[in-house]
Image (tube, rainbow, N blue to C red; front, side):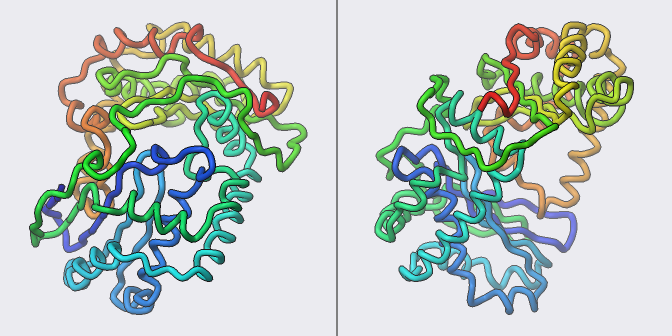
Length: 373
């Protein structure tokens, strides 16, 4: 599928999306999607000086749902390269020596991830609670991957782009890409979390963090696609800005934390609500108590005034994003249900409150610290 987006400035973007990613992985190849992202980027090595000279920025990322390669720059410069970028992605010309070196780089990135207290907590939690190893993968699998494994995976993952997003005044044409299911033996639709716990999951313990505790709290129920938009609104109402209920009650009034986050973690078309923070050992229980107090009183904190503040803030944010469309294309990558922008004008506080107890009632939440993993 090709999405042609007309920008409002002279800045353009070109995004090539491959759906599947970690949904293709199984025991023995955990982490191959992320490694392949690195390897495929080798196709552009010979252009790096030329792209710099033309002011073109490029990068790629691997999420649990997709792998995306993208380039941004002035239209007059970027337009010269679009066809070349697409052609380069279709051919896997990495040498075995390059494979070995890039695998070592990814392994270093793996250690970096598990040296961060909060990230290591999150990664270990996902392994045990959802049997999900994420883009970072599993160290022993990364070490055992072969050059042939990557060649074979290239044919599976990169047979066709799932979507091309062209932010430009010049439209590009082409036949629709194959649906992922047309060439993959795997079924990834519908997406969902694996809700089965895996007590045998292999966890990483690289550091002992004395004095501070990472806190992660997740909703037990999986958020249905039809509830994503109101849950996104609730999340913003609770945690967006220093004037939000969570920041006011837990940080500003009680001084228990520096930060507190609430976000909706996406796995395909469904999700989970997560809270995260970091605090000293003696603040863990007071933090938990303060959080529960806020969540147990939505009528006090999720008021019509707060709803309107967040709604207007989001609408203005979307307008800003559309002005800078070359760098804001997530709404074209995510499932329709996840694009709050398309529903923001009509969503109501009443709609949000109808689903609140399903995903934010403290009785529906699992509280963890990094000591648990």
